[in-house]
Image (tube, rainbow, N blue to C red; front, top):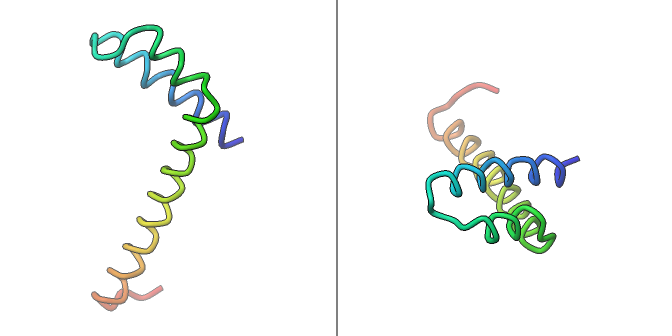
Length: 67
């Protein structure tokens, strides 16, 4: 399910970049259909989510928030 959501998000992000003229249509198609790029982005999102979770846990311990 995650790859499907990432592909949808990539299509919308590519559409925004194409609309703004920052990315060509061919580049946008490569980003939204290339499985290697999708895998890298999926791994990056996973790392970001894990990092946010750890940061939240660290802040909870530092500020004595109750669980």
